Length: 196
Image 1: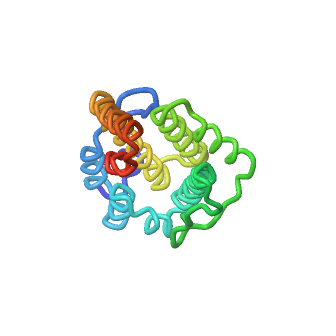
Image 2: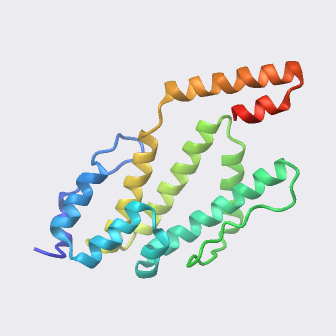
């Protein structure tokens, strides 16, 4: 049974940003392999492997999400560059991605992320915004490859979030702060840059 979108999609668990990952990427990939044709499986694999530009050529929703994500990352890079006293932000334009203009809404979102109390809070805000954009793109997509592609993007976000190890992160922060304290106290700026 190939291209059985109804069967495949009906078998997938509901994903929630606030809940643990309900399905592994490898299990999702196996389900896709058993229900989709080779071209569709290849597109899903492009998304899973991070080759979104290739998937965006065939799937409009992936292109829209990628353009939005690149724009938001560009705004964040600009804010970081400005905070470091640089005039220019890095060019994050990727081949195949069209520039969309989300104006004040995306600027406010970038400011909120940039102004977060901690890197973890900033990451949570960023990933939550990415999730909401995927949900917005889901409207009108039912039992088709586009819906599966967006589901794939959600799984990638969940996988990344679940890979975080709070204890290891706190240990890393302690090492950086210790190095910073030592560099500040001795005037050895190079120790700080090596620790980061």
